[in-house]
Image (tube, rainbow, N blue to C red):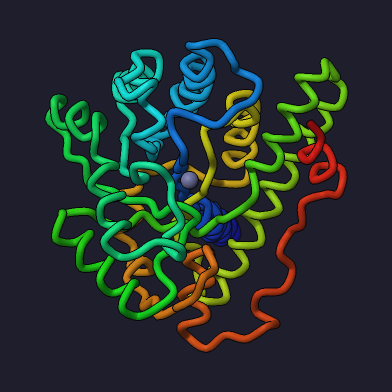
Amino acid sequence: MKQRFLKTAFITRLGLLLTSWAFVFSVQAQKKMVITVDDLPGVTQYYRTPDGKYQMNQRLIRHFTAHRVPAIGFVVSSWLYRNGVPDSNQVKVLKIWLDAGLELGNHTFSHKDYTVITIQDYFNEVIGGEQITKQLVEERGKSFRFFRHPFLRKGETPAKKDSLERFLARRKYREAPVTVDNYDFLFSQAYDNALLKGDTAAAAEVGRHYLDYMMAYVRYYEAQSDSLFGRPIPQTLLTHANTINAAYLGELLTRLEKSGYSFVSLDEALNDQAYQSADRYMGKGGISWLHRWALTQGKKGAFFKGEPEVPPLITQLAGTR
Ligand SMILES: [Zn+2]
């Protein structure tokens, strides 16, 4: 009898243990992230040779392959040209992205700010953004289907925002949201400057700050999605094709994995209901979609508190030439 009781108690405890493990795993499994990379073929002061950006992207892609990340890169098509003709050193950047099984999307022709140009000029920017990349993507039997707004600006008036949404839908684009917005480009400028001065100690310090800063941003937006949706949502991280990500993205991916993230495609993330949330934000700000949804729901000041700041050391170093 006693033995039977013990056995039952053991099985019950084992059951509880398994349930709590399953709970931990299911919570962890829910943490998903899309890695998006803007401004291809890249922005760098350090990789200066004709095929410098190609080398930089090779390093970037190695991180994605090692961590099995189905990343998406957004291309600024005018940056693929040199003296009016396609520059093979830039075009081959796109080829290695596609060869690695990664996706490419439209980031306009010349990265103009929608708030300072007309609707028609912006439409031409979208169409111009199809040059070279769209054909390369379609040659591989894939579709060129995502659009990322430069500066995350969607239009500061109802007319601009609505007409762009309709125009993109007509051309069969889905808008690529960003939930984890940040200033990675400032760190990359600081990193470039440190490397160009030959100050490897300063460069390493920028790298350390960068990792902490990005993780702080991820936690900030995690907390916001928890309070807005009551659960973790698949996050969309904004990064850029730049020097610091070529060097440090692998370590960032490792840190994200350790905090429970797995990496998914943009397509998969957008299946989550959260991305169907209404966005009626109208303004010049290029802000996170989480903030757009929160503002649409009437959230006020306190909700937005605690955004990580770029350390003064980094802004100082970024401004040095
Ligand atoms: Zn951009």
